[in-house]
View (cartoon, rainbow, N blue to C red):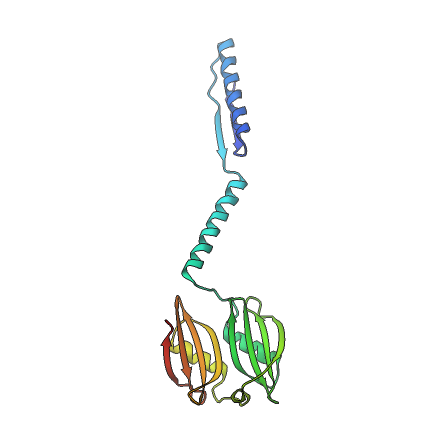
Length: 207
């Protein structure tokens, strides 16, 4: 009698039991006719269900690690690209505010030539404009600063590495400044930039 090789996919215990029963049957047959039977070889492969379970477990572990670290990943469209998209969408305008919304959207507020405020929401993955709405501007946001929002972002990230979380043309102690928040790992930094010169006036790490 020839060698018998059985390949089974690990799905249920019933399959293995059937193989074991067949092995016993072959052994009995050998005893009856005096021939020699080589023990059956059983090869067990890991099924798709087990593979999916392993992948899901690994994914869950990675998600838990990210949550524990408190890090928020941004999409492929960075703040500078979002600023460019907003200015292409609303012509004859300048940016006065940029906000990262949970690593999913950029909210970019622009001021038009006639002093109107428009908030443009941009997808961080695709760069598409998702929506726009009218917003109220502060009085100091109606005059375009010498240092643009894009230049302020560059100055902030040159002074402090990390990812931009927000940018706002604000007033601090009676002086108009670019107020920038940068996230570096688990640390958050606030920077104040002169909108006339681009100089970093002050930086502080949030507690």
